[in-house]
Length: 455
Image 1 (tube, rainbow, N blue to C red):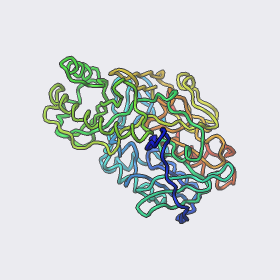
Image 2 (image 1 turned 90 degrees about the vertical axis):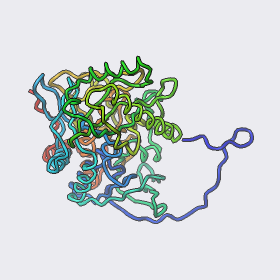
Image 3 (image 1 turned 180 degrees about the horizontal axis):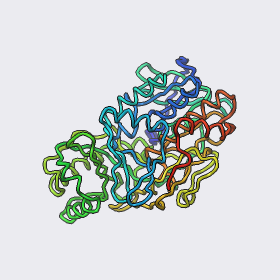
Image 4 (image 1 turned 30 degrees about the vertical axis):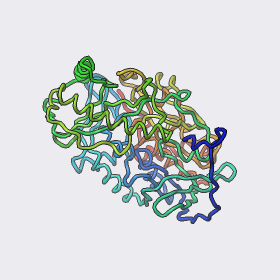
């Protein structure tokens, strides 16, 4: 948080707010906070499990990073079996979303760049499709609303206070699933967390889309070739902070999504994107970088001579902030060794993708034909009876989160957390007491993949 205005002697000045009564506007069985990949899946799964569910989202649309940031491809949904074959590792509600996009011509077949694999989609259409999914599952939404405070009774979240155009309002849930990305509910509740690795997080990026691209030419460029061209621009004097790029051809003709910027301070350290001052500065720096890259791509990269920016994300792309402490922790060793614990609730084969110093990106790939599992305890907030997390704020080490944070596993974690929340309500048990066999059975009955076919 900002330090505030300093008064005499360096003390932070404060004001006293008058005591006030906050109206209770909802008492759902399950409250899902955050409508990104994890939140969409959590809300639909909880409702599917028979729980009266409410989803609260700070933007005026759903999708989170997938729409607000204009991310160009779903990552972590498949594993590479060999040079020619792929295998799905994420199913369930993610497949429903993908099917709905496909019916609207808004998703493409998986695109492979060496050992990097993504499923291109149209982010504008995803906003509509997400609305349709929640409506189909009977989930009401409260948009343009964000968490302002949390009240605790013993080891339970008793109330979540929201703020929106109507002022402050309280929601009294039986169970909460925090899919906010930054773990806002968990942190306001007093849960333990780490900020990356001792305060060092992965660097964020401002994402943008270009129109007017000759995709017949651009689609033939390898990532290695694009990096060579961008390094030439650096040699010619362009101050590019990053030359290892993600270039996603959109399902719409002539549109390309670029994941190429890097948001770091002058000394090369990443911004703390949970800090309002750092976040503000990163937004400003990121926009300037986007137009710098537009100029460079127009001058140096074939197929982009007529390209212009037509969309910049409504917010910077955040890879990592707070990692909430759960009953279990996903570790770097478990990811590297493709550990599949008996209590796994999701699988993925995405590499350890680290955005740290220098102009490159570090990729540590898992063996072909293998994956790892995320333990259920990574979603259960330690010390609380009715609080789950799902998405990039899961309980994980810094390096392990570099793999688990992408869209595919976030969908899968969200579906598991929502299903677990519904079970906790129905069985009247604490989050950590949800029977794992019942949870896994429910997930697999609805198409989730806990044992991928990788042969």
